[in-house]
Picture 1 (cartoon, rainbow, N blue to C red):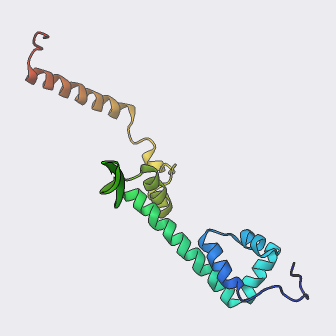
Picture 2: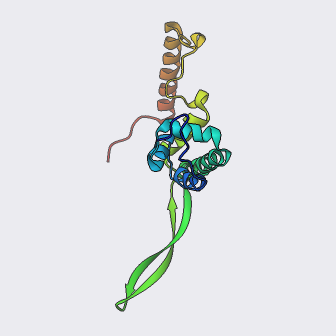
Length: 164
């Protein structure tokens, strides 16, 4: 393991390896394990070796972008072309088919809660002026209007007919 004052184990090819590992989602701890060094050594390499830091950043940006793109596609739904292999006269025959994946509600919620946290947070704080926006008197008035509207609708329909 690299220690201060000791020669580094860093090698130029580590940048390309780190890039590939980060494309697969590697954390700094994962990089340390892959290079058989302490996590603090990876931190020092990120500071000391510009090409290593750039490779790690580039790999993580691409991986995060791919995941975000696919999450977005799941959220809005997507269509893709594939083929299904059927047997015809005992011989395999590929048949092209279009598959549609509908939007995924959980992906929508996840996307919106992260992109628009103010509007989509799971529990938004209740604003003080909205806490008692209906008092009892107002509720009684609304209930009475709804009841009268129901009676008027019933009168327009006429009396119920015999059941068949």
